[in-house]
Every structure is written in structure tokens, then in C-alpha cells.
Image 1 (tube, rainbow, N blue to C red):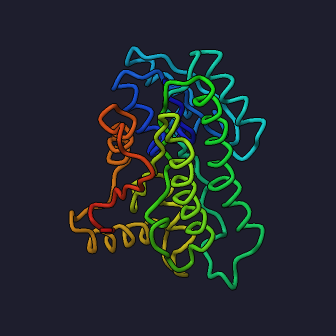
Image 2 (tube, rainbow, N blue to C red):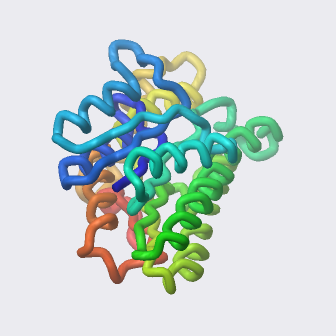
Length: 267
């Protein structure tokens, strides 16, 4: 039984992970901050329907991972419907905003906005999920979605990088603390990925006089040029890694941060 946060986007990593886990036979609860349609996409209800079409059970729960009451309500709803939580995937992330600035220009408001979701939200979800897994016994899997920006710094990404480095550190601490309960905790660090967020990134970074789409294509081209496998990541690339970490095949793997970047990061 799995719970995936930040799973309402049509081209998002969360949806891809939820769909992949369902294809592997897991019931999946999906969460997002809204269940409203997004453009021509049906949002969270469409993801629930997609999972149910595989024959697995699903439930969509709206709530913010940065709100402790929402987090507890999300976990409680999962347990009420399915009776257990075996796999927790923390994918929810702050949307791109006015945080793509040099540190000397970055506002405290934007710094806090990013960390509320990325850092605090991951902490709250890990805490609530781990409390259930420890209390129930029988082990579990926690998978945190970090970023290549949690392995190396990028100019004008101060808030985002710091939040993703924090997730990597939190993952290692949890692995140490939860190992005795047979709970593995790992992070996935995707490189540039072809999601809706890529357009938001381009919008925040584009030079004056450049369109968002033109700069998006430029970002893709630049990343393809430095990636040994010659392309950027697709959400399904990340989903396959998450499915592996959630499987019995990964039962001796914990505290790791796995880069899914086509070789753009090697360490």
C-alpha cells in the first residue's frame, strides 16, 4: 500500500510514480494541494481513475504537506481506507516562483516559501509515515524525491538547492534511525526532467526578450549536451527507480541518494 504526494500533475513525477506502483500491484493514495482540473487535464481525480483502471484501489486526498494537520489527515485517511501504509513517496515540491535569484537578491519570503514545502513538508510526511510504520511493525519503504540540485549547487537556485540538500541529509538520518525497524529510507535525485515544472523554471530564468518556450528548449539543449545519454529525464525514468526502491529487490539498500540524470552527475 503506497502513498504518493504531489501526484496531481499530468506530466509530473508524482503521477508517473503512482501509476508505476499501481502497475506493480500496489493500492495507491495520491495527494496534491488541489483536485481542480489543470488546463485540459483532470487533475487528482484523473490520477485516481488511472490507478483504479489497473484494478488497484486508490484515493485522492487534498492537502498541503507543509501543514501538520493536513499531513495527519492524509495519513489517517490512508489508514482508514486501506488499513496500512507500506510505501511513502515524498514528491510534493514548491512551485517555481520568484526564488530563482542570486542569494543577495533573494527575499526571506521566497526562501521560506520553498522550504515550507520542500523541507518542512518532507520532514512532516516522513515523521507521520515513520510513526505508523514503527508502531505497526513489519518494516516499510520511504522514498524522498530530492534533485540533482541536492548533490551540487546551481547559481540562482539558493533556496531550492538548500532545500534539496536538506532532503538528502534527512534521508540519511532517517535511514540510521529507522534501520532497526526494517524501514529503508532512500532519496532519488533527478536531473532536469520533462515535467510541467520545466516551463516554470524557464519562466523564472529566461533572459529579457526571450520567450518561455524558447528558453525551455535552450535549457533542454544545454542539458542534453552535457548528459552522456544525450537526453533529459522523463517522469517514467524516475518512476522506475522509485518502483525498484519500493520493491523487495532493494531491501538491503538504505540511506542512498540515487541520481537519475543520464550520467550528468557521477559520484
